[in-house]
Image (cartoon, rainbow, N blue to C red):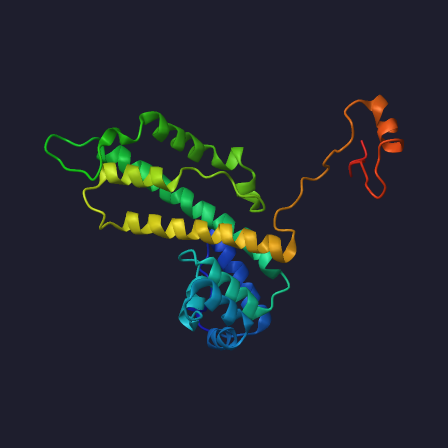
Length: 253
């Protein structure tokens, strides 16, 4: 096995996803050509065609997905996992993929804000796609604050089990880019479109997961359904409890 088949060393959500995919492949004892053939001729390929309208991923695309160099689409990631028949299942891999997606999006927004700070307002006679005052200073400052406090304020971004609130709406980011650039022929605009596509994939995957497993959105642990008044608990449990329903929380407090 050549060295390029293994993810490069490093840390972070994207690298964790690459390592998890690589471990699944090695555990199944498969090579990338064999995986591509299994996907193309199996139910994973049928699901991929139905979801994307494209042909299943090639061996090169599967190898790139586990390289850790860039975030693969969820469709490719799901096909990769299905081909390996990993005991982790798509749920655990989706949490890791979504965590990597959020980290990638945060990195992109950070670069957009750095671009705005570096470019500054247009000079006399300088053309931009949009007027500088379209996005207020308070909006930009709020984006910067949310970016700085992301890991501390939204623990779901760390665990990967619960998505953190979006740092900025794509339309706001697009306006910022338009106030800084004079042409849409820029890789930042292309990356923004890719982010929009991954957001759509994440929403569709969550909806599909709800229908398939009913467990992609975990209930809050220790949810209380008891009356807040301790004196009323006994009456509620004996007099007003419908048959077959439990009003006591799992915490029991």
